Picture 1 (cartoon, rainbow, N blue to C red):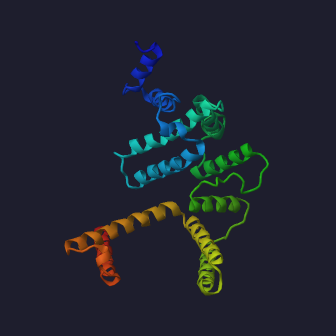
Picture 2: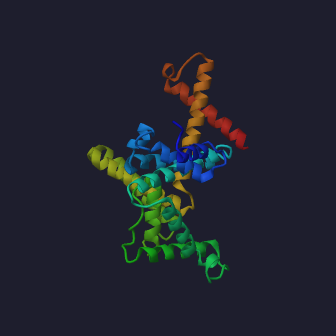
Length: 278
């Protein structure tokens, strides 16, 4: 039996390298088809896909941090797939469609850029535009508590900074970095004391307080703590990789070494990094 005309059209579209967004949406529709789709894709829900959405966003950020421009199109494609996946599930449930998503963000961009699409002057600094953006967002939310609307799903350090920024807008903030450093010393002392006097749960709470102040310190210093920690993770990975390489040259693995030897190799890796920066 010959395939129906709509099946032929679908096959042609999914195999068209120039099909663009329509091609991707049709691929997702086919993957979710209850009769002929992929069992894994069919059984997914908003809740099960959400962690992948966060992961793909982080991979985009990682590619940008590494200036891996050849990887970025693929990472952005993975992130776009998440939008298409969520939207396909919403269409199946009769909640909303892709056009609703595009309309919502387009309307938002127009409303939040009156200096481009409206009558306001463009003669303002980037800082002033940021303040205007936050003011417009607040007006869109309507009457609300200061910290409402900061997404729970954000990475914890990023969410800490956003909460602190919200509080700072109403004057709840240390006036200078020096006060934050004083608070940092206080929280460190409390954590040290907690190790021997408090329960495991209470020690974890003290650690959380310390990390929250660290995020505050980063904000006061104009540093993105997530980016800073990603950089530290990358540096640790790179240096530990060198330790493994040097041990392998000696016919050993890390578990056949000891802390003294690996620490000496770590210092060697640090020294090499410093020479490259010099």
